[in-house]
Image 1 (cartoon, rainbow, N blue to C red):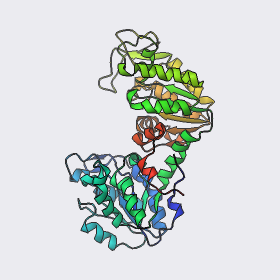
Image 2 (cartoon, one colour):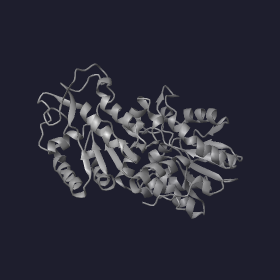
Image 3 (cartoon, helix red, strand yellow):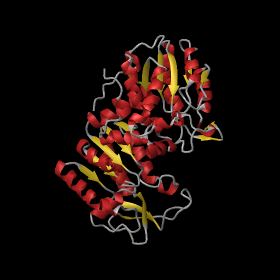
Length: 410
């Protein structure tokens, strides 16, 4: 995986029209942004290009846009929030066509240091149409608006969409730069290098519900890490593969043989594969998810037939925390249990605390683990929290991400 990419520091934006693909896929409630983390994360790249005298054109998707262009998924609230944070009006092109006449005129009127935000890229069906060629016309129209292109949307970088990777072909064809922004660079530095070139001992922690979601990640990390820790719902398929009774716990019967293969692989490679030794169980899943629930702790090889495992137990939490203490690099993706419930969040919290206290480089791979760490108030104790759940998983699988791959090498 080539990770030495051209960044915004490697070219001068002065007087240039620079198209920046951001990740402004923010949560909205009644037209108001409820969490502006992704907007804040994009500011350093935007401010750098403005300061250099670039004409900064921003684009992003928002939501899934299942029912065609609509005001609920318009980027208008983002333009308002950006204007406030940058202390300068961000001109919003409300046109559902994204790259139409309104966009062309807005860009033509730009002065150095100005910022324009285009409408939701997914309002154009060609943004994510497969095969890729269907998106080439839209990508070419985006490229026509700019001289250089910067991808700073790590959360979308695993998708070969028109505004993420296809656009680079047309920008490059006219001699423009295709670089990554500061946010993308940080993700590449932490996640990419953790997997490709870790400081050892390297401990990887995987949780979450299903083994099926992490097949290639488990396989890849067994080769890269010194210790692989398994928690969450996916642990029960491994326990079942060892011949243990797991009661009503979540299990993927089709992946039993796969789990056996992975345990054999760990042994063959001389890697530690840690599984729960005790489990927090209840009569069933909490309903509502954060409601009160009666639990007990049992040995992981003796879960009663009428119980369901919903979190790791205290002995397992201690075992996992010990494994983290001596580590120099830790990557964590996926909670240890139903962390949304206070009673069932203990396992996830203990792992989060172990990472917060560790002297290692600690990397949280987006998604639920990021939500859990932030919810527990330990986010600022981690070296890096990834902004992309799906993208960080694919990075951990060792896949080439289209948005990263499409940028120029240094």
